[in-house]
Length: 262
Image 1 (tube, helix red, strand yellow):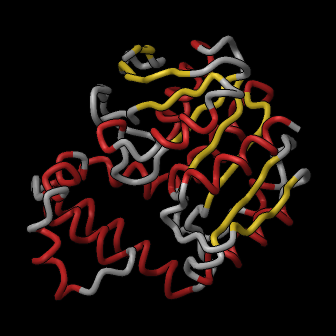
Image 2 (cartoon, rainbow, N blue to C red; image 1 turned 90 degrees about the horizontal axis):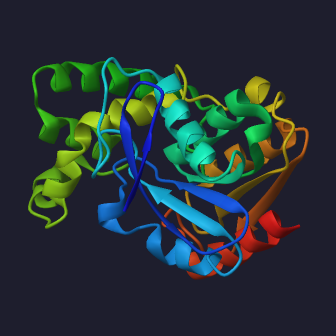
Image 3 (cartoon, rainbow, N blue to C red; image 1 turned 135 degrees about the vertical axis):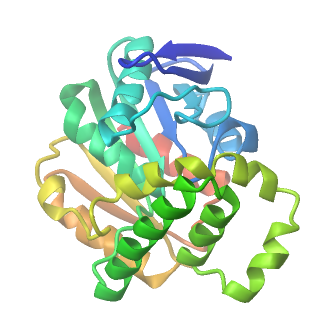
C-alpha cells in the first residue's frame, strides 16, 4: 500500500502495479480496495500501463476530513495524479464515472484521456425525483447514525424490492457495505442535483473520452451513454456485448487498452 496526501490533509491509500503511462481506476458507490473489484481490471491493464487503484475518502484505509464537498474528491484524484508524475488517464465505473467526469472538467490537461462505464445519469423525470428523495432521506438517516438504513435506501434506489432487504442484511458482504455507507452522499453528490445527463458540462471536456455501456444492462444506461458521447467534443460510444452493470474485466480491459493506447 502507498499513500498520497490530499489538499485538505486527507490520506488516500492506493496500490500501484505495472509500467507505462498512468491510469487511475475509480470505484463506484461502496467500492474499495478491500472488495477487490478493480483487481482483475488492474491486472489486465498492467502490462501496458502503471495502474493505480485507491480507496476513496472515508473508505478502506483512506481517511476523511469534514465537511465534504465534491471538490475534495477531485483533489484526491489530483493528489494521485501528482504522485503518478503529473498526468494520467482516468477510468470510472457507475458513480465513479460521474466523479471521473467532474475531475476531468476541473483538472484540465492533467487528464489525458477519460473512460466511463455506465455513469448512472437519467433524464427520466421519475428517476430524477427518486434521486432527490433519496438524497433527502439519506441525509436524515445518516444524521441519526443509521448506516444500515442508509444502505437499504441505496439498495432500493438501484432496484432492490423492499421485501428483499431483510435477506440482503443476512449476506456476508452486508457488514462491509454498511461500514462505508456514510460515503453514499459522496456518490449522490457526483451525480449533480438530480442525476440528469450533464450535457452542458460534457461539452466543455476536450479530452478524448470513451463512454461505454453493456448490452445486457438497464436500457437507460445505453440511452445515457449515447447522449453523453454525443455531447462530448471528442466523445466515442461503445456497447460491450453481453455485459451488465457488473462488467467483466476480461471484456473491459481490452477495450480500455485499445482506447488508452491509441
